[in-house]
Image (cartoon, rainbow, N blue to C red; front, side):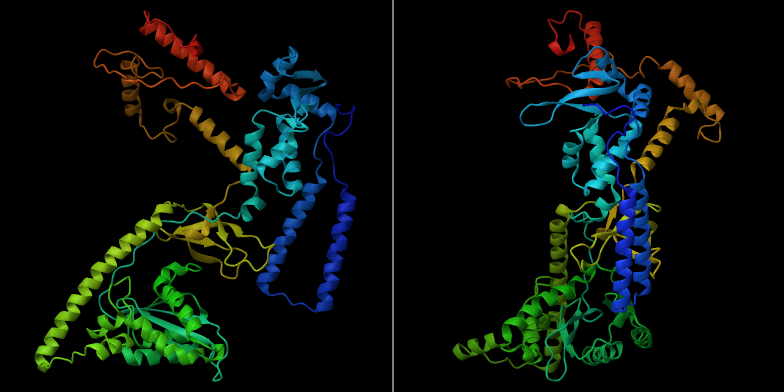
Length: 583
């Protein structure tokens, strides 16, 4: 039944009850914080202020009425140009439309084919109806929102309107479960000089050993894949630097060190050590461990080996040397050779060699020192060249496999983006943060964004952690209006400041258009310069059941059919017949 005269269309919320509940919840939260003596950090305080602004915005939205009065709807329907065709149908009682003061339509909404009359909503009230069906109904998916709204309302392109609203909804964008598209893999240069460039990281914590060890400092040579691991009691910068110097004493000083953004590595102490030893220190992109893939992959090998080797979790440091020995003896897929072979020029004696010696022992062949050194240098050169070729092939293979599901992401300065949260600590925590603004495009895969509510106002992040943020409907509508207005203006009538052509170029272009106006038309014509034939083969025609064309496409299809009929009658007057669609 239609609403009564002067009543509200839709429903409203009791704002006094809502305010009372919010005030009661706030007072209870204040008492709880006072009782527990909770102290918030600066970042938590800024986050609480941000959440408070969101709460006030939601409260302001609740205070706004959902619909207008019946007189306002009648006036809006009469002035709405988007409903011209439906109003014409209602004047003649066609396609289920009819007038009852308001514009209504008969619609089948249930499985029992019961007829229900729904209101045709004018443009100015559609946004409020969409908010009532999506924002105030738990941010459900667009299919459920369409089903919910179609019980009471309808308008042209209702499905697309709901879908666009759900895609652009701020809360829905922050809580998307889908992972962002990944950018194509970047290829690291293949190195051949051992310990020229190394990667370091921290691993742990493990079960506390009786000597107090709980962590591991891992170290790997990016040329030979030779690994090192030093147990640590703490992860403080002093102890990390001390263990790192012990590794340098065994293998020499590297030229470049690669690590993540851990405070132990980026602090003043580590920077001073690197500056004193003339070592270049570089870091990966935050929350993108793929940049340090060699050491991360070493972690994936070492931890399972320790887990299988130990009998008691307290004894894990005792089994660490033999696990490292096994990794150094085994061939690495990235080089094709073992780390010992690339570093020493030969494979070391392992338990597998002991089994061979029990069966068939072949002693070392005596050689002179000079000849042995020459052979060793030649062998090392051959091994490193072979490792370089294998590394290039493996790098190309990994990139080909990875890029199969990758896509190129291009961000520009000023774009709005969402940043994926580094780690979800609660089921109710949002998966994305933002929106943030792109300040600088650092490289093809790294951009600098602004973080106004963070302590560090700017951060360089990988594009794999970003997702485009879609603006709200109002902003997009204003943008479309501006673009349409600019496109409707003729370039020849623009001022010299707005157009890129000068007066002479305009006159030359106008002469060209006047000369070839018969050829430069929107509709196709006929030419005798060349001919072509279309071979359709012996295929049987595709037959399908008839179906109704959507109303939004009927006008366009009628124009296409009329243009096609004119062309056929003009250029093919003796054509035996036409398709029924174009008659």
